[in-house]
Length: 398
View (tube, rainbow, N blue to C red):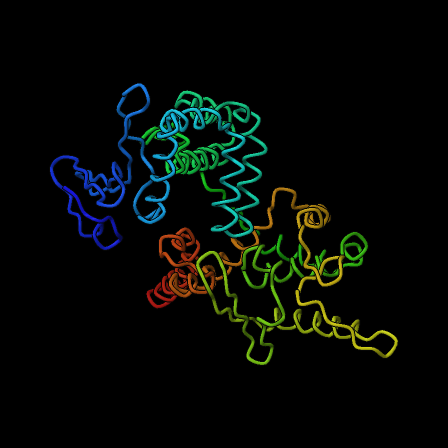
């Protein structure tokens, strides 16, 4: 079967019970293979100088356009005419790519173009801490499932870290197949059981919350961390936002008159956040402070666009972990993480009787199941009401 291979003609091809190839009418040996699953990929049929038949894959339709695939086929045919063997060369190239090379390509062509900054940082950390030390010098095509399982097992003491590393390897080797670095359906990270993860949920009690706030208000805190760091921690407590959202917060997103802030790019997309009076007060103080510093020798100086300013001019604070360790040390809360402040915000909301849908909206959750972890905390007001009714009945019958 022959046809001029174009986007439209290939899209019209239907899957059949067995593989079949449609050959291009312009370039001899250039074709598009269609599998029973509907997968369509370009290939080139030729004979090398020894008369051996070759059918190397050029690329998958969708990932590469027919025009680009046709040009590759022409180059390969020119190579064949000169005595070359593109199929053998591709096999050699595939074997030459190291895992370290694959990691670098993954970061450059996938992570840095598709992921958010926090995810990019985490991918780079996993690569540098675990993947490159274990596999970096090895050939990407030589990694087997037992190798990946061994890395996963070596991290069993930290199940979450082990599973994230496994997921990252799965994505990288999946792309390696698409890029021709490994054969199709050879992903060595598949069919490896993940470790069970126990989510850690730590909420501050009222006493702990009072103690933490007292430290944040104290001169001791001002002596060891910056005012920006203190303000950031207060905003985490009062808004329930994620750390990255507070540190990346810009003044242009905040409307103090309406008490709202528009976050254009949260974990679950754009979000309009309503601010409490306490949060508005902190933001107003930060704004006044920034405006006060904007005048130098009678000249207006541009205000830092970031709400939580860093040490460098015009930059945001990038590391709150070190200040937080000092603050929680003063508050004697050594087991509390910054993310636990978000859990605490949610627990307070559940404790005062807010419905789970409303609480989920405040937190920016898109799935009810995500908010349902706080359902047990919402029983306190119900229990109080039950006690009041029971006490009243006992008073009547007594």
